[in-house]
Image (cartoon, rainbow, N blue to C red; front, side, top):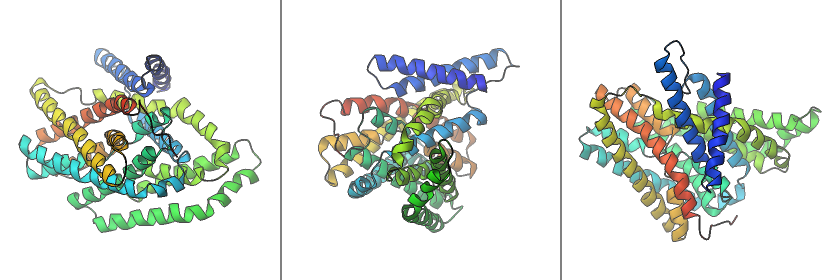
Length: 395
């Protein structure tokens, strides 16, 4: 595992540097480093069966999970709460538009493809939630994360994740959406509303403890606690990490830790997350030729509907909320990526028996993996182009 991590960091930096030299987002290089390393380790494992090495193990997944948590924590640290409140209307509009249209289009596409009603609903659910990891990284690189567009995207991503979880609970029927909703409200009341009132006192412990980097340790403790309890509340840990970042970021003391958090995140954990994303391309590589065609067709449908659904749903909603045409396009593109929640929804639906046909279940899961890889690779390129001229750097 130690060697795998070392190689992941080395190749992530090498590939990222090459893409940066050609004036392209470094994150694409880091993802492609994962594709390369995932393929190499798969070949080694298949050739020498006694050497079972993979970037898709649970051990490496732990490091990758920490990477996405750090990325969202950093985005929270650099987001002003007052700016988020200002963009509350546009975030809500974009979130609703980004849920309704992808869900309707995805469900309709499933029916037209020949899937049953329940399988089609699962397709619609898969296309709802945005993964802001790659978007945040790209917006940070473009220095527009704290713009009106960046703030709207962050707020909308949190809301549409929550809506996606509520809809999944409704469809699966395991837990009442009302119960899930109450848990979410309690989480935000305790960890955001009450947190704002006590955060300064908690961070003062960092000054009271006369040890090197004590404030950093207190801040990281809070960030991990928030991520944990967000998961307990039924929402993604990344939302908890983002909320913790907002709380700490709106204190004066945040200036003392942000460089250290960036050093830990960008220097270690965050590149490992993007390497893991790329390596996922090789997941389920034992696909036979009989099913490959069906998977590619379904993947193509999902990718097209995923892009069109977010571009139109989020873009039109942003325009209705008062954003300019250019800002609306930027927001639509920013909301395209799918990742963790799409995979959670597809695997949870299969585990719950919503998809009874084993072959169809395998096709949907494989198509979801391909969807996450393609949208993750495509978004940084599109974002760079839509922000290329006259970027919005307000905020």
